[in-house]
Image (cartoon, rainbow, N blue to C red; front, side):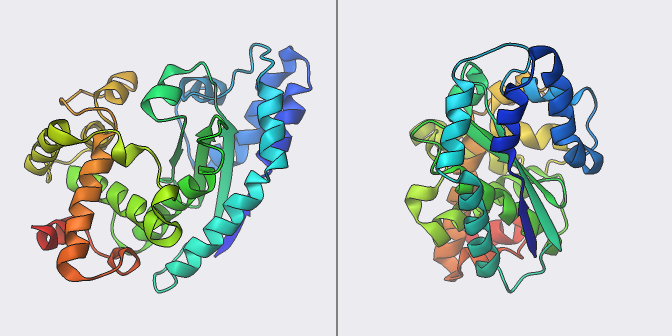
Length: 281
């Protein structure tokens, strides 16, 4: 598998060096290649802003130092090395011929990005592309590469397992991806999502998710994974799930499966969500 991590930190520095009136169009050029393969409704700039991306319609003195830190810390190189290790660890499975990675600077004033998702997140549902976004705080900057690994696991998994927009499949896939990060890089590499909910709220979310395990439709599955706040933000119906609870629910299922079978996460990558649940209970 060929891994191409776009040097977007330097590209975004170039965008910010341009007059404010030119930045939106430069951003469209930067993301154009991905949008050719991932058609989305609406203007890419509006979608970028709605998703928590840095603003191209205003000057913010925090942006350039943040991007310079990404360059100095070689986050592009970090992502590349981590993805190469992850690909090798999943070498028994069919993989995409090429994966391209596009990282975007987040907006530190975006409440959803900073509070709900923990300052960063990724999307790996589009074949051949990983999209990452984050604000490089001390807690985040060293974990961006592992977020890419999480998303790569989705890419490789769905080269080997048919994607079915079912609540159980979606939740288990998130648990597997986080467990895979832990397996290869250790618990400290995991994102904050699987520990945001615990105790009785997690127990309730688990019970509600298991009851809806076979429910289909992407507009429904995301609510069980990402929780009510994100469901409302992007137009889905809230179902009474705490923010990001699907990650902890998925990890609980996966950990029970691993304990019951003795398999590794890498070995479990080609199992469906239903197969994993059956072994977990």
